Length: 108
Image (tube, rainbow, N blue to C red; front, top):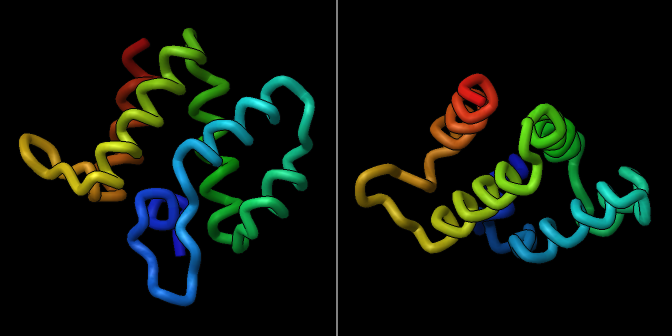
């Protein structure tokens, strides 16, 4: 399972989705140094693949020139995915999510 799938709720009944506000809050505490990466992994019960996705996501956020603006963009995108918005752009498509992150950090 991917972090994207768990965050927008594209999961099986056996796997709990990760609430977007929960992950956003944990990442904020991680950024402030109040939590360690291992704490976030443990709290979210991430698989190895999901941990890799989180590292990749954090890399994009940390490389952004305006981390706050970029983080808001990421979490707004995930909210649209959770709401299953597909008009104009399919926010449930994981490949488009990662490509958006690449574009946003390249075009800063």
